[in-house]
Image (cartoon, rainbow, N blue to C red; front, side):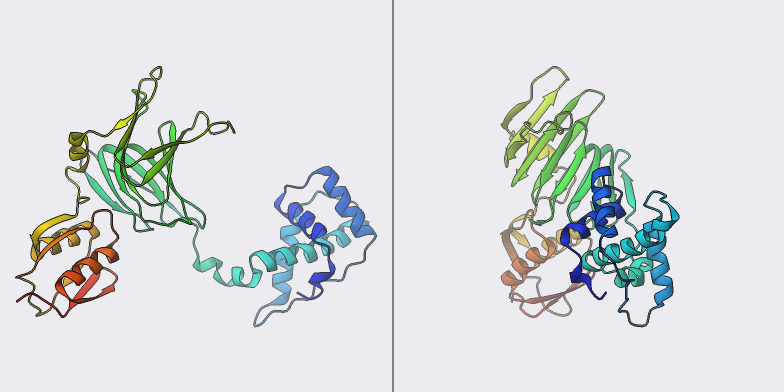
Length: 333
């Protein structure tokens, strides 16, 4: 839109607040006073292949629905100004034309609920994280994560292998706690009925905070390092932080494909375990890998990192096409 730079940034911010419904009485009076002393042009739209009348009408309706009724002598002029100011905000922050063109092709994220019903159920999340849901548990997550965080809700027990992403924290709401990670693996077991909570960290670190204290600015999160277990049993007992017992780790991993530590394992077995964990199919063509044996630990590694290690061992190349993997060349003779 033309003449966007003629509006002070403070006025644009106030107009943005008006549109979002967050403006207070004093700010609204300030905005109205500025407008009464400053003439404003009707917006000029610089659009291509778009119906300008429909676009302008949509914006006017959006603005007018968000402001209180004022005397008719000011209503038209105020709406004209707010249309100008709001269009600047929208054009700068979102891109109104792009939004109009893509909104129908970008559906709102929908929540998905998975229930394990007594069986270990593996779930591949939209960010390629893997969750093994255990016992009679439930996991809720969106079919696509937001631009800022990756939020899920757990009821019961699950083993998480979170895809590494430093710019998008992974947050689990579970029982009376919030757990926050960037990319690590851990097991959570909670029960609101018994007021019990146990978090066992396998790799990396996990920060947790009680939801009862999340509105207290002085409350500090508890950082739990790998190989450590955080447990609380009963509402009156204090939490315990201690090294995770070996037998506890064995029980946590039982029935999952999390452990990918190979010690002189035949290629065919490695291939089967990778396919099962990541829900992929590895095609080797006519290349001979039957004499290959692998010794490598790719636990808590992504599919691509796992393939890099395998390819290095058997001297091959790989390609990924959705859930189809092609290994080319190399081999063991």
